[in-house]
Amino acid sequence: MKRIGVFICECGPNIAEKIDIDSIVKEVSSISGVEIAERYKLLCSKDGKEYLKEKIKENKLTHLVLGACSPKQHEKTFIKVCEEAGMNPYLCNLINIREQCAWMTPDREEATAKALRCIRAGIARVKYQQSLEKKYLESNVDILVIGGGITGLQTSLLLASDARKVYLVEKNPDLGGMVSSFKSLFEGGNVKSVVKEKMEKVLENKNIEVFTNSEVKDVLGFFGNFIAKIEKDNKITEVKTGAVVVATGCSLFDPGQIAKYKYGKLDDIYTSLEIEVMNMGGRIVLKNGREPQSVAIVHCVGREEKGYCSKICCSYSAKFHDYLREKNKDVEIHNLYYDLCTSQFERGRKDISVTRISDIEEITEESGKKHIEYLTGDGKKESVSVDMVILLPVIEPGKNVPELAAMLRIPLDARGFFAEEHVKLNPVATSLEGIYIAGCVQGPKNILESITQSEAVAGKILCSLIPGKKLEPEVMVSRIAPSLCTGCQTCLSVCSYGAIVFDRENGICVTNEMLCRGCGNCASACPSNAITHKHFTSRQIYQELTEVLYPSRSMKEQK
Image (tube, rainbow, N blue to C red; front, side):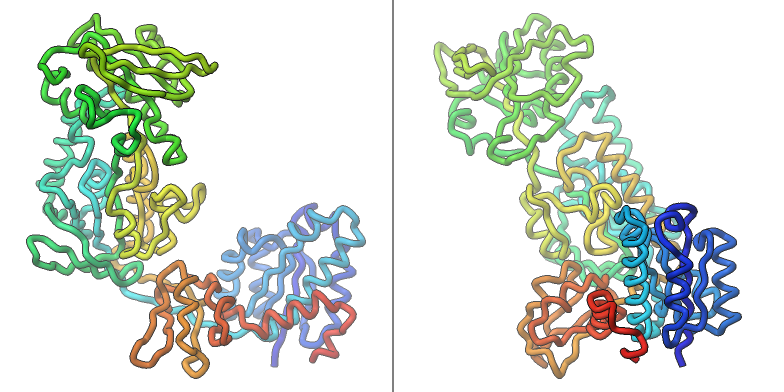
């Protein structure tokens, strides 16, 4: 026999001043199955939680309906209360009458009527909720880090310990990534020494196994239990890990795709990375070996084509001024930009000349000089002749990103970078639990921002993958009925977590409950109604909506 307890939270003045709680308590007390209905000042407080536990035990309640705030804010709070009181937490229904009624409906009478309807609906639903049992899994705390640039190096160093091994995979012969070509940061500091120090620490760390000239060919499994296949010299090595960190960096847009820049067609037109490499060699010179007496730095190359700004190009262009003037203090430097995203040009850098343009029309060669014709910001046609042109291409996703995303079953954003789970609430996680992203794989960043993200990733992993601690998978997952599944595979196309596979032998789809996050996409998309979502069954939702839409029907009639 179901024994339902209904408790309305006053939430200070938030609910009590906007809703007639006493009338709701009186109304729901007469509903069949309701054992007790009461109000309380603040259910989420320490006293409120103790009060709930006492009432559950005292009245031997089997089901609970709470009229309070958003489940997003306090559902976990009341789940814990139910567990401590010995009641299955999935027989509790938290109804949001604060945000959806008290705060949204100015008229007290209307807000009360709406709240009553919602709570009655919650009671109708909770009668059909079923007990769900939690499962616990052993976990592997080792980590796979894909990418041996500065972000991958920092992540590996932060995570490696005697209790946790890190597998660091780099496709190139050496660690360090793109920044190993840089001499300095635009914020100041010697990049080469920083990267070298981190590389040495990684190679010396007995808890980090480094795979260079290697690629991750496959990753299977779920958070706490991944199996990765790493290929090196046509040999496959399998490693077991609990989480995966993607830190493969980025690429630069190829200016050769835009004819007007003449990149690859005329001599002495270089990209920013080529200048970094040249500077590391000790000289920035023309093809004829002479130092340039005049240089044009063209910003935002490819920005219009890619549809976004790389945000760091303006800043590091100031570093090129220092490079050039170290070699020749009298060199003439022209900055041609569309938009500036930096204060570097305002912090006492009177030596930097900038010209805002609306377009580069053409670059030609005249008497050994590069002649650049451009339109100014106000539409005037002007030109400048220089010895050398430095193009600042936008940062774009690495060439292997689509392939890597498909293998890991994680989405890309509109720009082609890996998409974070939530830009504010979970910026280093992905839609697949246990797979994290850091650095420029997520979008254009400077080195300090990339290192900060590596620290954020390490923090997330260290807090969730703890040696000796078992994992608790999602309980409210989907289930596919084999007798109803037609094998159409519609569910595969809408599952963001890679939790559904097609069983070719039996011609049906199957859910891996360890991967399922309970989003419900598959259940709503299934054309044969073969999928049910635990805790959100069709009958539960039907009972709830019926009471909301037809409040004139009494609960006794529905019995």
